[in-house]
Image (cartoon, rainbow over all chains, first blue to last red; front, side, top):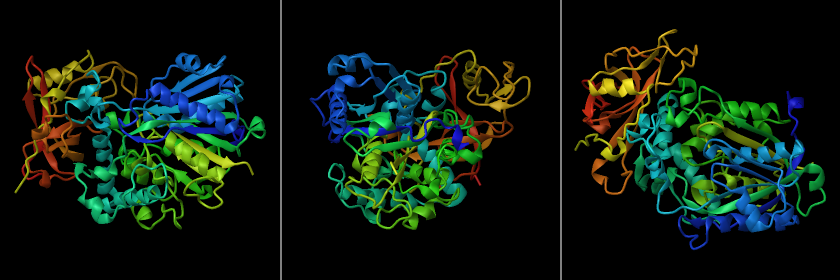
Length: 393
Length: 147
């Protein structure tokens, strides 16, 4: 099947740009467009491409206005402007979207961008402000309004089926916090012990405060171009080896539906994405040196580790408890920047940033000789996505 | 000291229906629990949608269910979801396997029982809260001790 994937190693992430990460609301008085444009300019400077020469945009999850970005940045002409549907699941897939556009000849220099700026509204209450619809009142009327409640239901079922414990969720929170402590841009700088974890306020059982990601303002951009052209640019190319976006019908609207078959309810829904991804890759889980796994909730890191084959189904809890995801000697170091739980939450683009830095060899918490990296997009409704990146030889 | 499962803020109960979902809410207003069942192949589905995902039929039936089931999963919400609704916690959101309607599940509150007594697999039975205009919202409580 690998021969069927026409994008393999054909494109590369060549430019990386980002703003600081701010605690929610603290980026004021900067505007969101200002953050987004600053990240794009930074990414262009990083690789030595002139901003006006950008000719494509690939997005996910948010409202973006390509016309406005062109007007603001003086971009001459674009041949591609597309967005993955769905919600937070598309960060990794948007890079694949950019690659597809380049290989198809629609554009040469494509920006993938995400910017987040939060106003008064807390994310947990966001769905409560949506207009009620015939679909939404089946969950909203029960007070199931935040992703933290929704994923708690999946986590609870996983605990019931497999004996997963809060100590396992704690290990995810603690190990990523440990990584954040030595990352200069990370927002969370206080060490976390098991006692600290259990002392945190319960939000929605089994999820306590430290099982939730941060709420962050900031923007991250990457520039994707052909692998051929990447050789002549300033930075060490990070090849887009394989990408996938989608999911199985039985997962469907997932957290807004709750009728997934038992085999997939207590999961991240990523099993089908992982299957697609590995079928397009020269290597599987055993060949991955470091992983950036979407951590909106600690429990979903464990469920993704299972769905991506780092351990067997149901064994994710004991797997993390064994130290497997620790940066210091773990079998598969996870979220080496401190992740969205403790570094910054840019809807998955912060994971793309860390993956690029790991494979360039410039990460603040560098994994020695890291040559391959998995990046996942958020477990959510379909499409969800993933990316395998590798160094050039 | 037991803590009793409350109800989420009334502000969240904004029932909007279309022709495919209205029979569910109308039935609840009459204290009757129902579930969409394909009129062709008999498959149950929730929430109701315009086509059966198994056979694409649009024929739909609304059988009266016994109103019992068991907890498939649940979460105890301890933090108020809207400012000023601190008196609504703890409330419990359950995913309920409905008797006689497998594999359909319903998302509903579990109310009026000790939150510490809840567990996956516990038996529950329906009750109805009225929200006027003939609209009801099904909720569940432990059936006996829920064992």
